[in-house]
Image 1 (cartoon, rainbow, N blue to C red):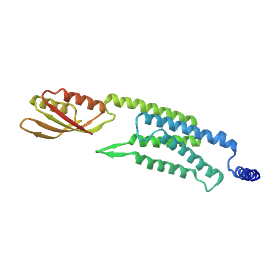
Image 2: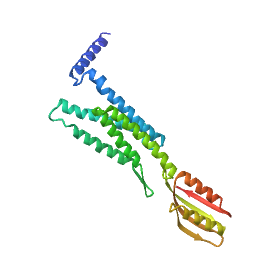
Image 3: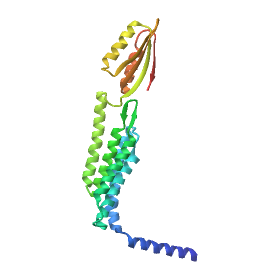
Image 4: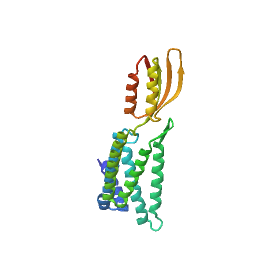
Length: 243
């Protein structure tokens, strides 16, 4: 019991030393700095939620951490100027935030099968850091408004892309084998109407069957419709899909 009391006394003394050596007061921590962190968590989570719902590689936790980290770095940079003047320079910290988030964004960009993916995710990370920096310097309302406007824009433009058939295009390789000469003409007509989205790469003409190797750059919905069109061709039709 005596040993426990002794250790408790030591811990209290250490805590007292830490509190007295703090550069910021508890009031500032609770009513100035902590609300900024909470707001950054909220804004970053909102942007991450929109990305998560679209099944993107970076989700809620990633954007939340980026936004909150940018806020904390900005506050620390401002504290350098306040406590270590004239040595402190907050703009240096801000510049490194932009560079660091750019490095993270580059890691999310994927080059696959001749197409670059992940640019929107990388740009959203960059924006999330910018929102965090705005919160760090005290632009609370502006940061929230920007977050809401960006989320609305992402959702609205996503739907516009879906309507125009621009969103989610993937490259598919389709092998089609036909026996009916009439189906061959229909297939070539389908490729022509696609405006370059369906291209004939190779054609092997045999005595009884003609085989086509097609390269298709279509959305999921367009690919479903294309498969239905192939299934409706007359004669013996065999097709194999690779993506």
